[in-house]
Length: 151
Image (cartoon, rainbow, N blue to C red):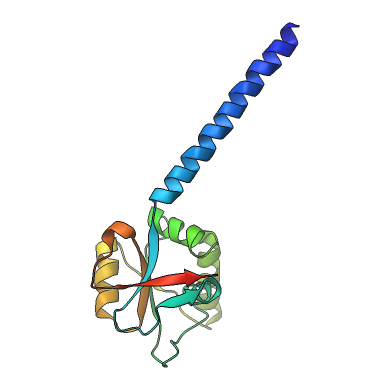
């Protein structure tokens, strides 16, 4: 009987741990808002997830009006960069890096412009026509425009 009661105790502990981790993950992801943002003069207000992924993987190079798309990102190891890639693009950051490196090394494209801080990201997007990037919800102001993502 001791073996069965130990099994039940361990099972209950494992169940409790899984439930706790699930709720913690949901709470963390709901409070970690990140949005794609563009220069305020950009005529695009909504993009599909596939188009957004094409832009950030540097495959789509111009807006519908012919203006070049200028992509700004944070360094690969920045937590916001990882959150944006996972939440908005549904890919891992290393997949973006792989696509950029492939284009650069093959001579078919270039990597996005890397900025060091969210403040620099906001400033560069606000002052660069055709620019796109991402910001934490708390860092968004009237100097940039949010792009809504559709499925």
